Length: 111
Image (tube, rainbow, N blue to C red):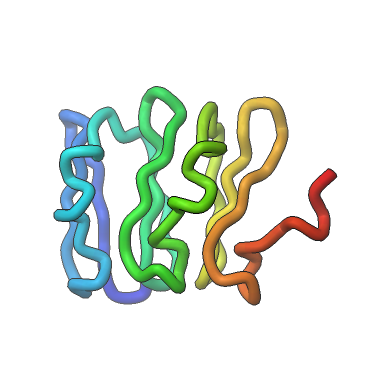
């Protein structure tokens, strides 16, 4: 993010520091077997070993993925803008969340 860092530890857990809005304490128990972490301006998204995703941080920067959480399975990659995330699934489909003006709503270009 712009004001915080997140690092994957050797045991697959995550440590964060910096801006308190990007603190991972609320999702710490979910952050196991983390494979990748990506950041927007004020949020993080982590891909777990099972292909699921855990997000935290500022809601307006994609820190709340609850609206698409049931679709965040078999995630291969995540990309971010300053206010949104896009998850590329193993089947090639894309799931987006976050601020619509920053790419968080891809409904107009979905099949």
